[in-house]
Length: 288
Image (cartoon, rainbow, N blue to C red; front, side, top):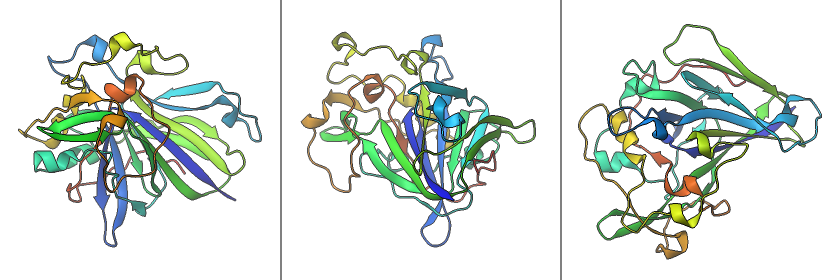
């Protein structure tokens, strides 16, 4: 049998395509660490895989109880091969166009420079929907949505179960099994989150109006992405403008998940980095 694997990705995550001939390849999702004097303990982000606890039992019901598996220091491959669609929706800001240089290929392999806390590599499937996030000014006078969640689907995932096996990013070491999951009605849904502890399930902190940024305020953790480009690069920090309804229309946008103006929509934003070349590729854990 085969099923559809749906992965919802949220938080401080950088989408880095690794192309092969034919227009497909692998999509690496890099989860940068919050290092340096600009970030304190309150900025700590935790990488986790989340799934419904009922998925641990074959034929089990949906329980609505999230189970969390920490991914710190590990890499996970979901979908073997190199048939992933590499297009990024226009709601995902492309930092490669801003920096003018590729992500350091070290972060697609052993990460010897220790810039990542985790990595997930998607070898099949493609982006299907995004949460549009909020409206930001990325450059003077350039207003655009910046997504905070991405939905990725791998159709026809082989087998009738998924064993999540993560390997240390640097290679070697001991693999970790994060759980064996079973689809329900042909669909298995998991989440990849890289967020602050207070934003994680099962009870994320509410985002009240007092915490909303003022117009012109940058997203607090966005600068961590720029550490992944292997040297000095131009740093452009978005500035908050307002709700997604305040933004002008865009072209090339993907279908939208229900809008979310919660904490992750204004603090932990996803981004992309095209033009990365081939790199060494991640060889970490298996998800098949």
